[in-house]
Image 1 (cartoon, chains in turn green, purple):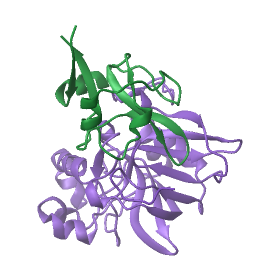
Image 2: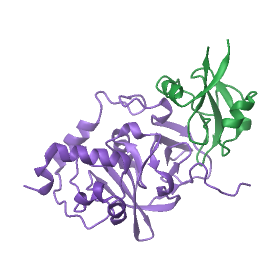
Image 3: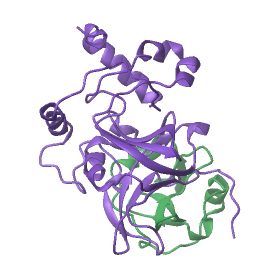
Image 4: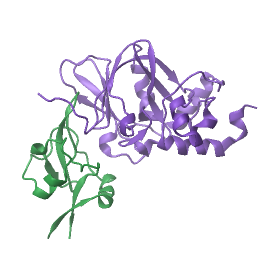
Length: 86
Length: 228
């Protein structure tokens, strides 16, 4: 199985079916491929990024004004970074 | 018959289309001048609430689950009653007593139209009127000029079911936190400056927001701020 990184059209297909990934829980941060790091917009804390198999996308911990919570890792133009299996 | 009633549904559809792209700061004076009674307001409230509505689970709008309202643990030191809009996450928080906050998914303004800052909520209205600002009319007269006299309240009004009016001191900024007839825009950047919410969500929030509380609109992604 080969993992490819998908942004844009395929990503939108994930949005309706994602399971809950709120809060600072979930999977632990893990190695993030260089391609993902290169795609991610710089305002995100890539050191907290992790892959969530529930939706096939990368998420990161966002330290917001009220809580620290997982958010979808996004490209510079705002699209989530997800994977597709072939 | 009022001017707004003459064109009926087609006009309302036009407004909804325009508002989907350019949702609304509001200016005065208002010439749209009908004021719905309590019975009409309650009927509209029922109209915009899905059947068997549960604030935290009902989702006929197809929102991502993270945008559904939920109670979360809040950082210490926040002032109960205050509102925080996290523009990166697209969340609005209403801080509660006891270290929690209610979180709601929102849409924020497009591009530079979003104005981070600290505001005071000095007015709130159920089923408000809407009037495009002069700047909006000048920028896009083809969309807004015919609404220069204002639009009557109702479920298709771009401000939706509730509006919280943001002031700096005694100056109305024309920024609002409001309901939207376009719930599917939640999570995105859609408006002309305001913060949009699902109408059923802001209807639940509205009675808990007191006049005089502070609304913090935090910077969006890509906004350069010093970090310690």
